[in-house]
Length: 454
Ligand code: HEM
Image 1: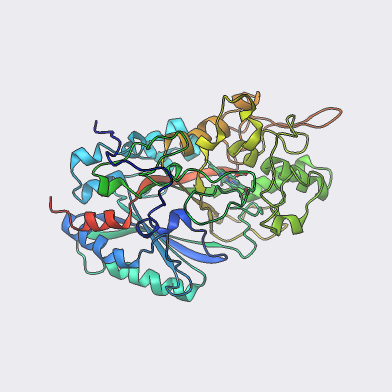
Image 2: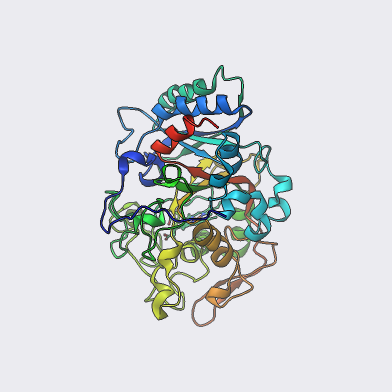
């Protein structure tokens, strides 16, 4: 396989080519926002290339802020089948990461997408070879969103060989909270050269090559990059997952295990590693501190090294599993920086009103988007080794209590003195509705794709 590294030498310290990188990977989204995800199928490669040409002027780069001049921002990404449908030569298709070539559905057993989350139960057309192009449109308000989404829809209008096959509206509340009630999107790595400051003062920005292809990564090497150079460079892999959240089941479980509302909030926080406001347990272990949760200068400024036994934040809590920070690499055996990723979670479906414990049957949850240069050692590693397994924290029977691949029989341990508390039979609170591995090419790669003449 041509699983090669670019021949171009990248000198140390060279800046990121922000003008060429799609805005979605490096820029925070506006907050709050409304958005929509569109999936398209290309039946005719000439029409597909015409679509790419029409989308190009709508895509912002990492240098331009889409706000307020453009009113919204658009990200365009392709699946392996999509690049194939556009007529990308086989030699080039073979140079993409093997996981991307296989697609997310083929990785189901590995990722723990089994039972209800099995691709056979996924929402149509997710996980099928019909999904070719993914377009995300985001805007601070509905009017501007519609205007830009209309332009995006117009891009495929009258193109007989391109079909809009799926649409999912999404939003972020002004509080930043998602369906389980927790503020999300706080823990995020900074990227060297992006010009965006780190929210975690003791975490050095990641080498650009961890997120964007064509630059050295944390190992000092250039990550494997698809060929030709113009297609791979300044691109990034994007993991897209629609996750249904069982909010009523989650609330019922906490109610059944807690003696009071205060304890309910505490157990919920122990599962996540943060209070609902976003305040980290590592800083405020006993009670929520909304001012801390809302303060970007403080709400990500912590580690776990002073809490090895997890009395403040359990080692099994979701956010500590997903980013163990300084708690794992003390003997140098695990480099947490190799498993970081950019996260762009967003809510879909109506929120279950506060206090309601009965399921109203509505489909609600999170559309999760992760960006990074390494599908396997970033998203797949975190999902399989840290969320779906407990060996790394010395608790093989335990999975992530919120999002782990659960069969409803696993425990969740909350360390405390004099004796720990063990919550039994944690039910599955998250069901995978579908997803795709995509590639978000650079702006020059989009031009290259539009101009293909194969
Ligand atoms: C429906 C499913 C999920 C929900 C409701 C959820 C919720 C949350 C919440 C509330 C936080 C804490 C807020 C923050 O630090 O930003 C968080 C952090 C995080 N989650 Fe998730 N998450 C989900 C799935 C996942 C998955 C599948 C992964 C990775 C494979 C993941 C990776 C992370 C990471 C890396 C962090 C940041 C940790 C840090 O830097 O401190 N999450 N998540």
